[in-house]
Length: 289
Length: 289
Image (cartoon, rainbow over all chains, first blue to last red; front, top):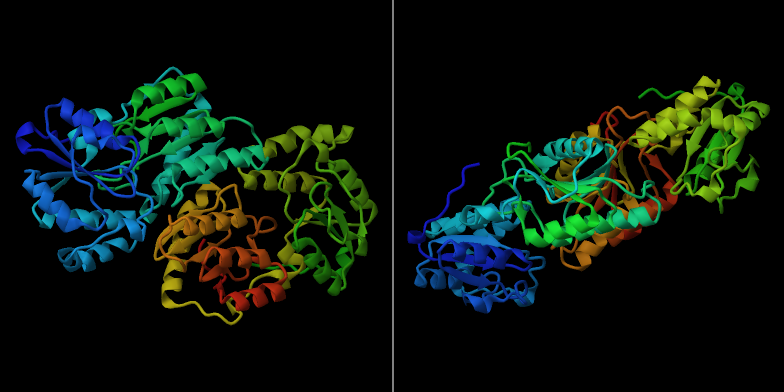
């Protein structure tokens, strides 16, 4: 994967922010590299983030024209989308007259899987002169390294389960499905689709406590980017809550693709993993899918 | 698929029964064809079934020797496994001395996916002179027909979603995973693994009510046997509760493979589907996987 690191002369970075711990982590890393940041937190998603530490403009989902006007006025050409946006409720959605002209294309982008939505939005912004960047391009330190993070080491059976999970994800990749799976003893316990990783881990914990999964412990959460995925958005990510979910689900560890997975709050994540005895394995960056 | 219909001269049929509506439905169909039935309901799974309508012997999971002794005494050579066994709790498991000799092989069968478990048990019984039969061999009327059952018809989009789901199941089939998926607008909403179809449908209903799935209605539950699956056990099945789950999940319909899917209580299932406006589509028996 080639990583383009933006230099300060690229002007300030516009960050459209959802919720979770990633947006502020990326903003801090970008600023630490000497680049100015302008935040565009989304109403209904980014509440609770300490956005006041940066120049910022709250926007509603759908306010494409307002975003472009403010971002241009701030001198931003590069745009990053980051953070969780779970539920575009009608109360958190606004359109202006100019947006309505773009709406047919935006709606078209909404059909099909998430990939269609995001690549549609990217083309829309790029037609207007912006460049969409991945968080890993502007803050490469946010990516998982190759190798083991933390103290716990995967065993042979864990590595076999990881390879089995990666092979399944490779086979499922053309179907634009959530790219995470839980494997124990070469047996798939759960597959992530719309519900997301955290809810899938909760399900595994429940299936264990009600006896549907016989073994009390063991198994690996395997996450990988989709094959051919545009890595400027929607890279898989893990954070401290992923470790907590994996621990509650009785898993032995978490395997991701190094250089292709965002790690939120890495220090806390590793401390939690060490405390729970859970391994965090970064597979070689070339790992399929 | 070749279907072997056992004739009365094959002797009584031994049915090892778990829970749910299938065991009694199959027993009644077999008796209606003039063949005697001896039930072996499993403690902890088959409680509540009206087994007293047949000769029957309650057995605990693990009582392989007791089963074989009673089945031989009754003149049974053919054995059917049918019904749900969710949780082999220690209280519902018993072993005798002779079972302990078989135990290493039984435990070996427990490793790996469900397919390994079942094919291991089948070999074990066959080594002892029994023949394992599929429910569809002794009661072929239990299988879904090809074509539409009931009043609601699938639309073009539903057929596209069905084909998309079948293609995904085909790709996932080598991984010995639950063979059901929910698809809407060529987007996979949920994949079944250990949790089972009913719980997957409950998840889709929840994701709809909390807005994670945007559209309020639509989508198809697609179920298919695994590629290369031994159809003497573990054929996919649907019943009235599948229709109820699909209705609560806001789905448009259910697609299965005709001739390779067990339908429990077909009359009630069709009546419920008609009331809910849900289509039941039987794909041609040759449909992959």
